[in-house]
Amino acid sequence: MTEMSTEAKEQLQRLQMLDQNVQQLAMQKQQFQTQLFELENALKEIESSPQAYRIIGNIMVATDKATLKNDLEGKRELVDLRVKAFEKQEKQLRDKVKQLQEDVLKNMKK
Figure (cartoon, rainbow, N blue to C red):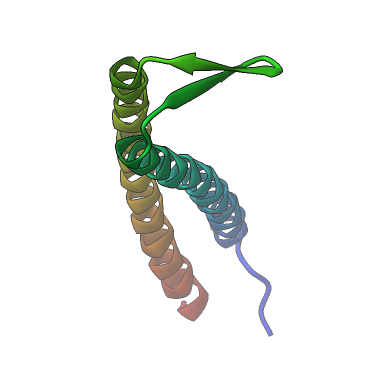
């Protein structure tokens, strides 16, 4: 078997690094998706509950439902934007990985 060229080795290293970046992004996106799910559940609970409470430090205090709902909706919008940004970044990185994989395969066939 012939030895890989320096260029091919560098491409493989870049490919591994990009793949790690994709995995990290996917994990971060998953964390935000979990937050989004929790926020949506909290909003559903507020609708069906006569009283709303907020946890501040180690205590739970009664709060205005409308204010709490507005706060949660604002957080949900922010988290949703972050999830979409992570999805966009992830897609871009996956496209780069795919292109680099094709380049590496071409170089290995030479």
